[in-house]
Length: 295
Image (cartoon, rainbow, N blue to C red; front, side, top):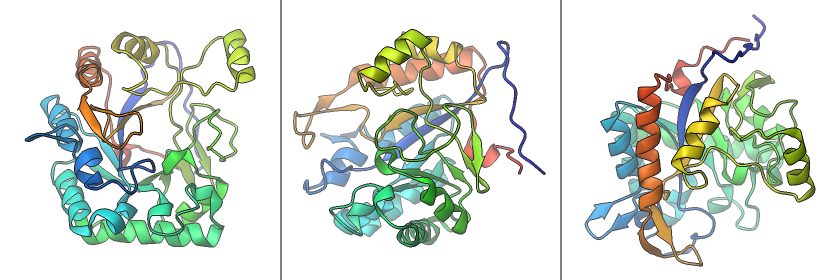
């Protein structure tokens, strides 16, 4: 059955998907205790990373989708990532694949689009195999680290039977996927691309931003305040709205991004406020496993 694009009108609310890129990241690759710092967000005896995000989600009876960079286990320990994925899965949250291939493959090639199709097939197979070993099931969705996917990535996902991707970030220089969409989901080779949601401005501002090579603003807890996030969601006209966090969203870092300097209380409050708003205004918050895409 062919995929039928949903027609949005002003009275239709988007379904919300809360996504969390769960990673130490490229900037902190060689940092001692990177997992504890930037995945767990350990400050003293408290964890302000994944555990805090899960606590806030659970308090609101909302489930999130955690894109886990499993290749970091090469640096920081397989047992840590295995325990993390089991914890997320047992809590009812989605465990999806996040690909920063430089951790396990080539330290000089950060983005997926820098690898051949055959290499990408192998990288994805390797990553989904780790998750299957740890939680007993394969991931169903993928996001490339740094948004650095290309169309070969989508074909490699199809070959690995991962049929949802959320790497495409319109206007971002690392995003090499070529599709005729901005925010609307669109199929490619039987893989459904659900783009990273961005703010759409009026045509004049968009042209000025483009001339300045300004990257469009995504729906990120760390780049939008509470009011801007609410306003943007209320004026968003696509079927799915991707909300963006990182495992380190609630912590502050030093200038080199390798040490924790404190709690990012603004981001923490913004996330709680957002979830309160979604519940109050009766937005449907969903997961990838519940998306009824047909082709």
